[in-house]
Length: 143
Image 1 (spheres, helix red, strand yellow):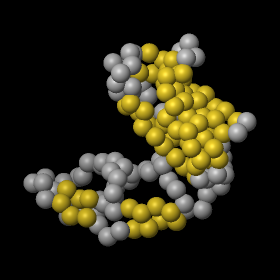
Image 2 (cartoon, rainbow, N blue to C red):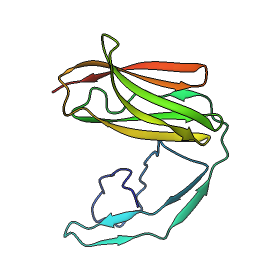
Image 3 (cartoon, helix red, strand yellow):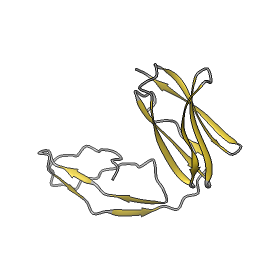
Image 4 (cartoon, rainbow, N blue to C red):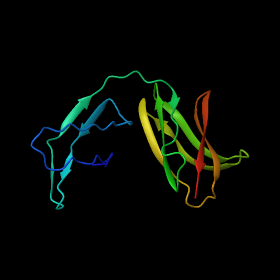
């Protein structure tokens, strides 16, 4: 299982409570379970819920999150079809620093973590390339 997020509880109450969390990295089929943690540290898991989503994906490179970041950030993108993908990071002068992804990926949503602990503060670029298409975005590392 992967932790997607955390929502603070409202404590003990006799009234029903509603909580909302948005999963920004969905695929066609998603499986979820909730972990409810009491103030004393005890916890329990919900039943597993499966969600099927039929989506038509566009070729898209999202803004990294968080941005600004220190030292790591998530870069996500969508592919309309199975493609050979290259995701690279450059410094502001255009010098290639690293290749985060260089493989054939299925249609849908994808994400990767970029850890810049070894780099100085500054503006960096990341580029997604598939075939003859390319998208470039900026990100800010603040230490």
